[in-house]
Image 1 (spheres, rainbow, N blue to C red):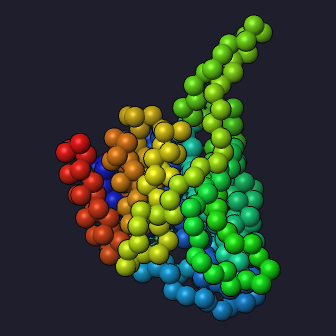
Image 2 (image 1 turned 90 degrees about the horizontal axis):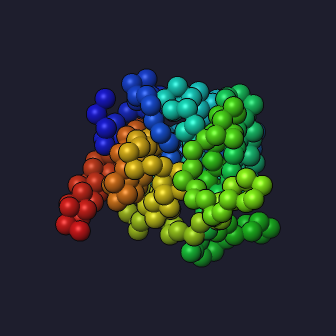
Length: 257
Ligand SMILES: C[S@@+](CC[C@H](N)C(=O)[O-])C[C@H]1O[C@@H](n2cnc3c(N)ncnc32)[C@H](O)[C@@H]1O
């Protein structure tokens, strides 16, 4: 299977063909186009080319569980899944339900939770009683039996007389831009600076990182900049074409500098 490539297909298909992935870094559709709970069928907007971002809670949870079961097949022992999720002020509950169901129905558990603080948010909040969300979450999942052994690039700070190792502090709070700049085709992108910081925390240089929802190619760009191999899946042909143009440019820039 060719690496450093984005496959224009459903990630469940890609995951039938790959193995030995060191880390998964991704941001799925949040299903936030649905207003309110599953009883309410109203859809706020159409967010993606090829994905229905307006599933019922049950459909969205079942879709996520299938994906995590595939992650279990492709991820190396002691690998991590860095899963960026958030919610909308009209659909506040689903993210928490999904995380709980992943822990109930798969071999994965939340080992850490990183807060991604953005510099800005949309200027006007339309909710009369909800806070303006200027953070998102990156859930760090590992396998339940690897909670004490999953890999992270922590440096030792001292060795105590008792033999106990102390480590430098790595805080669960990352400040990074909202995205890599606006574009005309995709409104739900994350920032390559955020991903570069995550790569430095969790991934070794010879690793292969998989992003199952590559969107505009942000994870690929961060990997190119950090000289780390990647594989991606993206269901929309238009987003893959857009990503490939970004990747070509990033590869030219890394050769220059
Ligand atoms: C939140 S966006 C990811 C954005 C990406 N992080 C970026 O910075 O551009 C989620 C992406 O998942 C894609 N997608 C949805 N279902 C998919 C599937 N089953 N397989 C692959 N891609 C899928 C959507 O087309 C969308 O581009």
